[in-house]
Image (tube, rainbow, N blue to C red):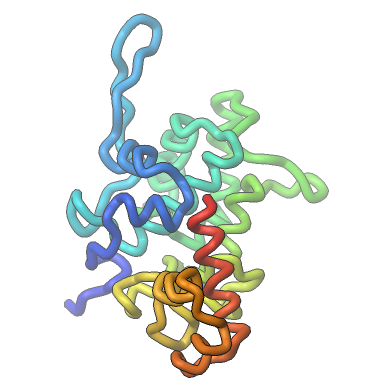
Length: 230
């Protein structure tokens, strides 16, 4: 069977996954390895939220998409314990793995999240808005809109900052540049572009060197700046 780079390649060390998802590295370690905490006078073990598909020391592209989705829930103030239980429920009901990296989370998964919340009287897990339509928190919906889905309904590329997946200037593609964010349709890493820009090289010079437009250089610098700022 041929290798699928989305699942089978360990592309992201935990600190790099944290950087791209704009969350603390320790948070990602907790999601991947689990952690212990004190509750009602005793130590409780929180199980992992993300199971690496390519080894414990590196995350796959699909794992990265799970990290980004969880970052959206975290940014919305949703308890990770609630998310953990709800994701397990969705995956069991839909009989899928990596629900947070699956398009089915946008369809059947939303209703299942609501079903889980209603069973447990938890009104904080998802939001009811847009005329009563069941939706995830906006930070999660923004991530889902940036994802390009494959025929198997699993994430195939991520377009950070794009309003529509497939139409952005920067893409994270596991088949290009070892999964690093690049200028779309090239292998030019935005981190490299930003380093040269930060060192003082004009955008016009960078555009000429890389053979792309000034607008593409500007977009690359903007996306990398947002990652660094977070």
